Image (cartoon, helix red, strand yellow):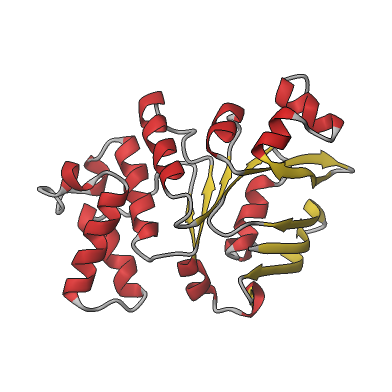
Length: 249
């Protein structure tokens, strides 16, 4: 996935400006930086969820493989580019319907394929053995960590190319956070992942590449992008060095 001179405005206020970023297929890229610097707004541009916000304006280009994201149908785009939010957001349905519903909405109709995809997705997130005997129970009967894994399974069942994750562990207890973090790392190579996180230790543990966003001239900007090793061990920008050392941000 690639952005070229991407900018986003809410009305006349810029969320971020002129972000050009090349995301390698199969990699995990962490987006770091202080609150309000445009990380989540950038993420929601990539699958055009930002279009649901009134008075927003996007300029620049986003490419998914060889396709211009703006030229794609929004529904099919969001199947290819899934998203996991900060707080678990299961549908107010049963566990199994949380996975059946999006599959059916995206045209998967054969019962055997639906069942196979559901089991595979639940196995991928380590939930199958925990819920296989109570698939018709309400999704809200699950713990917070289980709900977040269910939401991840819901995205995986659609077989996306890219997964966007907005602070996926921040609403979880430490044990649940560790489980979800390990799951994210296990998806490396199978999916392209972009993860917004304020947890620098987490970014260092899971990311192949890291992008630092900052507010400059009243707009979010990409300050530095590089491998996790380079960003954490030999940052090139003074702001990056100050942020990762705790002197700024």
